[in-house]
Image (cartoon, rainbow, N blue to C red; front, side, top):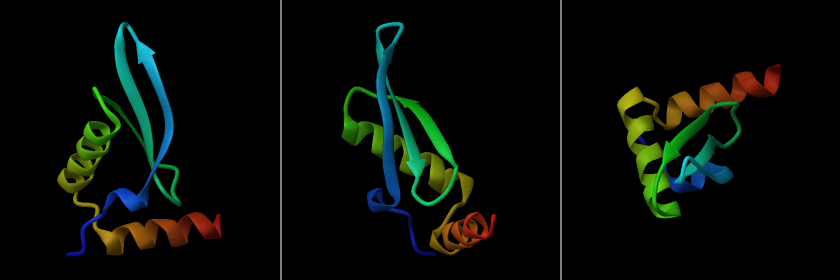
Length: 72
């Protein structure tokens, strides 16, 4: 199973909410956006990659999602 990497992610927004820095990071080429709290960009990307791994999204599934997004 080919893993997703940071090159498959796009930073949508970085903001402060209730004194904590939050990141909205999209899975590039899809409408899937992750919202995580982190103290740095690197930590935010690592958290999102861990969520993606736990969800079972691999390269094959990502390409399938992207193909469906192009059709709609």
